[in-house]
Image (cartoon, rainbow, N blue to C red; front, side):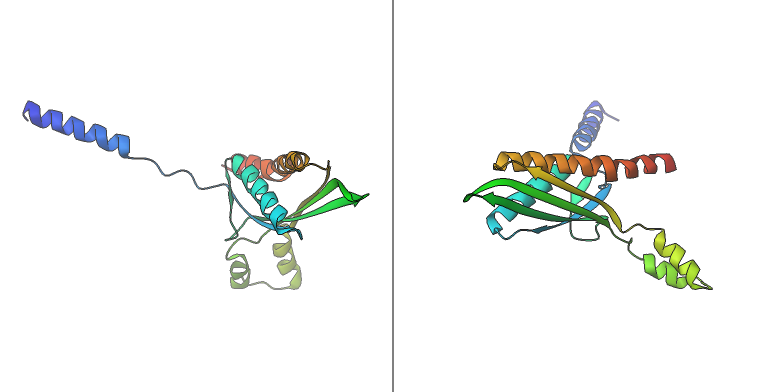
Length: 168
């Protein structure tokens, strides 16, 4: 091998390794959002705040396609004397049966309703609920959204992460 060939080979390998990127790991959780609010403009902003906070967790993808969890978000403005005095933010967290779960159950030879019931109970549907009161400003609302997603992370997602680590 000549010096030019060796240099060209080294250059080629160096440039391909610079441009080669590993695919990022798949998200650990997929979360769907359903926000209920009459004010469409505020609804879009709250949805954006929620998506941003969920993505900031690092291992959460916000997607309606095959979610692990769905967040049902309800926001109400409390008014008195012609002005807003507070926001009430409620979030219910539900989990979904994994794709193919019912097919797996139906393929098994189940002899009685108790076996079917035990298999269905193995996957919780209702996970958690958060109810928060925020001050009247949108900054207060953003802080409450941040706090609510932190609670979701602490009470729902982190235990699942820990269990996955233990299982591996």
